[in-house]
Length: 375
Image (cartoon, rainbow, N blue to C red; front, side, top):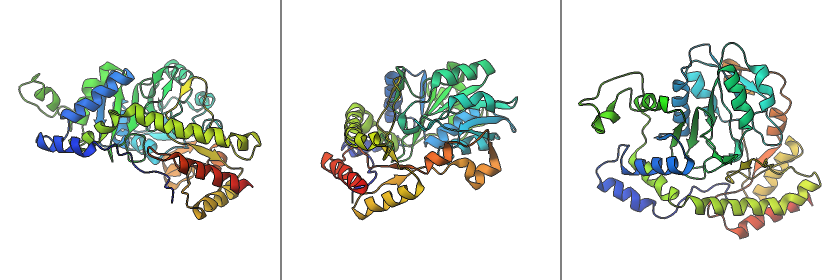
């Protein structure tokens, strides 16, 4: 069976984990946390990065830092994972879903203004498949209405929009290092703070509401409970695992891009004959090959396609069921305007195997099987 995903393993993870254990500092914010955060700050030109226990907890922090009050509204796409919504529900917000663009599967920036009300507080663009939303337009609208922007860049590590790293454009950016992502620490994530005014508040929020970090830096003689907070620090063991991969970030990225491009070139002819739709990458976007998806003509054909690949030893997986159609989506939010593309496009899409270490012979087997399905 050709698996859809196998978590990244470089080979030095165990060595670094042993080093973390030997340092007698495994609870978080140790040597490997510092290495990972400095790497991201330097590589992405970010004001400040904090590792978190998950991409979800990074979003939790962002929602708290936005100062959401009960009844505030947050605009987001319905085509995303539940974590995007849960973090803002936890903060007390109501969800306002907008339709997506069929070309990128991202939030349709042209639908934003119609969704804004006097209660709107935050816009949450989700960079699907590591391909950037139209951030210039989103930021312009947000600034003109005095709204904050939280980038859900869970899939966007190493991707760019007009030369800027995803996650560094809005007020806050959120990464995921789950085992399904390009770079993994098992469970983990990071929040990018792009406005320096929020750094100290984020540090307190992440440290259970205390100024413990200041104490360890020698800036205060004791630490105390300052504000609401939670425990968002990942273990040093997780950070050590991630560091092994960040050291090889370009190698991993280039390998994934090679696989993605091989799929693209081989399957383009099916797209030219309108048998499938393959991914579209806008000129201003530099993606990270997080996902290679194809869109079949309808739900029935997609179901047959996934079954056919499985019969030939290939795992292909569809993606999100739109949140606004789920019980919790109905309970906590509403869809603004008409659902023209969200549901229809989500029912067509399935993802092909793509992970670091997938050999090119297996990629060619997947391509051949896809071609055989249409023959």
